Image (tube, rainbow over the protein chains, first blue to last red):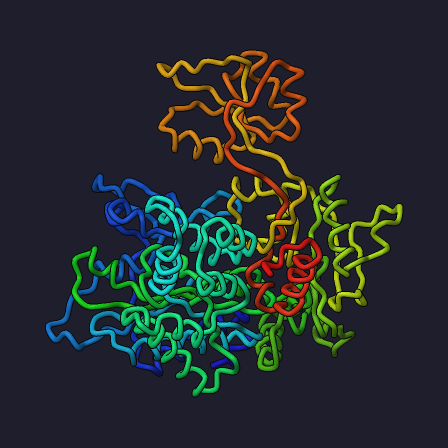
Length: 377
Length: 217
């Protein structure tokens, strides 16, 4: 079989590498239909990343949709195990159909992802985080994997707001403002909140720290030392961060409470991955026990998706050649001999056989049958 | 190679003010002041220590350039951010370009709540969100400019638009009926650029903040 790198483009190669990575860790491929009952999405609209679902009426009169999301389908179509400790480890390579925020039009988005469903424990979460980092590493560019915890950010907002000298309704607005300030790294908003709400010094300092580059888990641990629940969230993040550092993930992950998982169904640890040269996140995911519960499933779940379309922009096709060798034949040339020459030369690279070379066609070597190579690029 | 931060500035008065702020903070680029038709201006040796590359962009497009990574940071009005909700970091309020987003209409306007209120605006999302919060049913008429004409010619009952001094409204017998929010120019950053050019982006933000007295200290 030919070397895959000769026939697959860089994104396809990365896709293959990721499939290999996931399989090596015991994840099995889950294949699903492109279509799903529309009802699944209408009942769980709050969990969809974008508004709008591409629908059609099937031949039996049922309303179907081109999938805007994979996780919902996987939860719907897999079953609870009898053993509560058992986990289903699945990976998928699927396209989803969503409205692009930029263009306002539907787009087909190619993604590859993992789901770990059932008796998810801290080991599963560490493994998923490791595979997320490994997925970014496979792209071959500097990357950043960021971690956050949705409940920890809420706990921070609750704690800072509760310490403010304000009425309850004002505290609720304050809480929402703190979350927005941290999510958007908005130091001006943080400053306005600090000035207007008579926050304590500890709350002000923490708010300013959280709106700068990253999140210092030690500082947070100190802030929440008397809060068992929040301390648990911090311990979760520390465990994952510590594991990845021990596995030599070079400065990854970064803990940053501004990160959200990109969908409302994440409730707990969330991941987001960036690769240098791509303006948007290429990976997002997290823990989604809440979605499992809403869909009547027992157990927990954690997963992530890698957006292959985003990665495609990294690989410039501008310098690519169309074929290594062009063989030009003429009327009267023996068809069998021309094809035999083409077959022989294709062992060393791609061959394009023609009577006339198309305008703009890029190649390394030109052969006029039956002669030798005339020129090379 | 030294890190260069790409900066999208809005064309016009706001952009000139914004450039002055960058210059004062130590990120000057003298060639930007030359009378030329060039679009991109670069200075790799700024006083502030971070190389910069400026380009002029239509004001309403700055957020798109930043969101899509063509610019690492940019200057854009809060009105644009609230309307289009780009996925960017809003690092700083620069305190320039101050104005208000307001509902305006004819003097002594009385709202007839038995009918949908016809609202002419460029800011459709902002208008819908504001009136939804009031529980008021509206009919939005999307316009691209000269919004003040709409109620005068009977195209709409009121408008939702930016108001600076209010002179245009007054001279056309219109007045501010309610203020939706305060607007000013913001320094925004691409989320990926914030991570991979973190040193440069945070240096620019913190030096500007210190320069305009908004470093929280």
